[in-house]
Image (tube, rainbow, N blue to C red; front, side):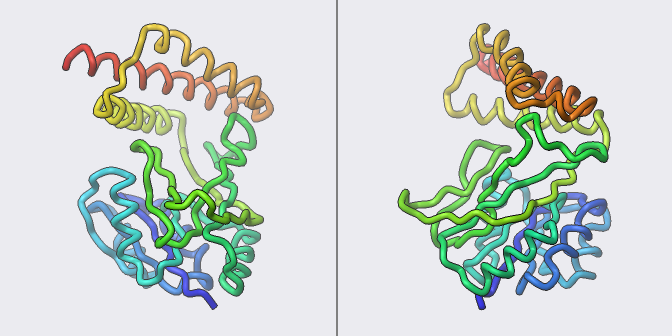
Length: 252
């Protein structure tokens, strides 16, 4: 049977981390938690669940994930965020893979809970992620704060697992707005560092296109009130990202 290391990043995650750790009990041969100096009860909860707890300065989502992956004893990794957990069906799928690992990595769908409601549209589902992987086959890349695991070879074989990662995202609209402000700040700085610029056309049209795409084409209206809220905030996020990028360009 393949030995599996579950790798989790944390920062002040006392509200979520126990649920995440409970969900991997019985499938994890090792749990590695890399924490960016939490000030709440995150450490105590992780130690109670016998996770290996490592403190490391946060240098970016991608950088932190690559560091965390290197701390694992097994090259076979299940990467989770602290606010995620495995559905029973996905747990069984991963157990089956441990008994017969045949692909270079495995993708799985992520289902998000927003203010108590499960969101199945708005472009938020199935939100397929490559999270069960062989660390020797690639590394985390992308543009902060949005990471993805990138395979070194293009002819890799990827499987798809039944079941969902259950993502417990925001408890309130205000929490979502706060996170959007934080993430768009990071995105704008990353784009600016790569030499990108934002035009007035992008600032004006990108939020409109985003709302129309997510609410109508991605059928966000089927998620009711929270579908409308999510699509409106996603539109705002698009506007803020390009507005902040333009501000950085004008001030540099």
